[in-house]
Image (cartoon, rainbow, N blue to C red; front, side, top):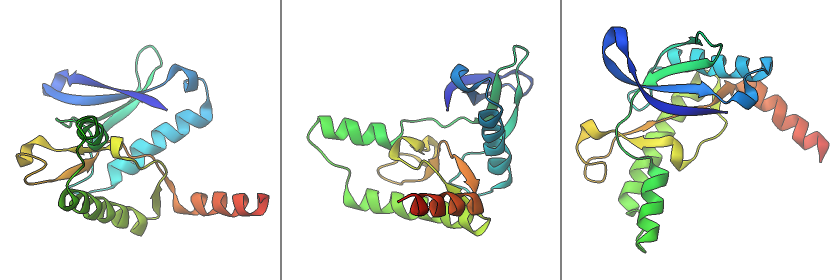
Length: 163
């Protein structure tokens, strides 16, 4: 749906992640609404393992954007691929810790009627400030695509009716 860039928020002089809506979707009112809904929902959710959204809107050229907390490090997906290329696997204790952290965030979101629509290892990023991820892990969901829970249930019913 979008691309994420490292950027600098000038007035605050801080590094941020800037997510923009892909040009393919920029003219679609539906995609723009989903994109901004993501920003609104994320800005309401507070959890130590969830990326924070600080701003969203349209740039001067009309590009839709989100400004998010910048996360240093590589995604869990990249780490798993790197390990696989060396014939290694993610240690079981690390995998379990990741699952507990992610489940905790999902539980909090579900309690607020929100469900993640696209959860995968590439959207989980180790946070550098907690030393080494693989010695003392603390993860943040780098990108969270959310939708109201009732909409997800409606979609699920529609799929069941279609089969």
